[in-house]
Image (cartoon, rainbow, N blue to C red; front, side, top):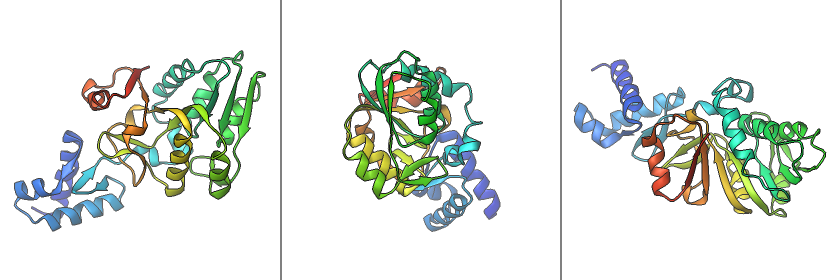
Length: 251
């Protein structure tokens, strides 16, 4: 089998089965494990999959830039945002992450809400200017332009002083084994720090993020209290999260 044909087969298997186990596949194809691993490395460099120990997982399209992500799951994100907004009680301190779904959450908050919103996303903060009863605390730091959020030492230091009732986390990828992951090292550190200071972490996951992985781990799924997904997601995709005791809300 030619290299090109083998790579096409790998991508087809990944799409159908949701993962590749290098050892198993090398035995079934009659090629060395090193050959499969080399193919996977090359496909990963092209952004077509995400390498993990022992094989590969689908790469998340959410690693695209902010403008491109705004065009993904345009129907799902507002519905997820409305379900997230319904979880907020008056008087709470709520940390809203950055990202396109987070911006939709800010837009979904009722104008009568009396709460404190902490965010490291200038985009989220601007959306709340016309909410008279919402106190907005904007975390400063280095602007990570890909996600339009602040990060770095100053941002991490500011986060350490805040305890929130709920952290609404936007993620690049969510997988039962890989956990919650993202495409930037500093962004992963920031999300992990915010989550560690929150009483509850709620992950907002549009459908393209489920069952995928990105290079940098934010946290294991044990750190997640709740996941909001859109209606119509295959129950087989959600069953592993429910089995871990994580609440799942289809929106």
